Image (cartoon, rainbow, N blue to C red; front, side):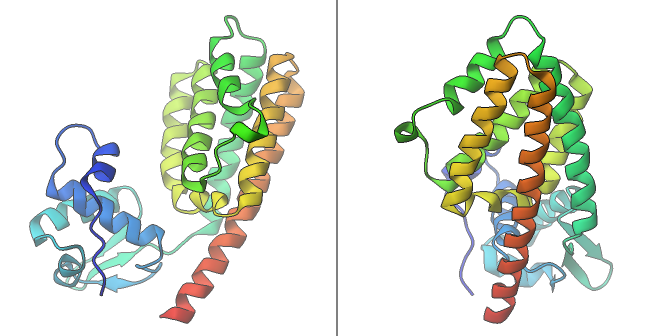
Length: 236
């Protein structure tokens, strides 16, 4: 089977401080889960996976325990490990909670002073079409940053903390929203409308646009995820 080792620069970007073998193993296994090289529900042993990611079992076990804490894996005593099945009911609930938090933040920002956070959002999303980023992975990172900055600007630290946890838990499917060029374009258009509504202090309009944006993203990623799972199973 192919190796899933990641270049050190990629691992370093996601970690603080020196990159350890456990960090590298964590990044590699997580990418395998995201790419459906490890399918939801798949069972595996540590020795088998250690060969696939080219690390010893000690750092691999540390990586697997971290992924278990994040909800991506489940340990099966005396059997091994299992990739957590995709639970769309839970994802729907997380998206609903995300809508509540982000709509509240947008309404707060629409009436806030000073408006420095809004200017930062406008610099990224209110740009001419020729200056838009087209790489899906890069736009995915910018999108995640947009929503996180929006919540931070709302001024509620506990909401920001919960929002970060939600973001981590839905990332496995949310990132797929940017694999289609049309969705990249739609993200720019929708974000721009949200930013303009906030700039005009139209709090209710901003919340309505944001809700519609997140709901559409939820529908898109569910469709894409199911399609990718179907294709992965056909290849298996």
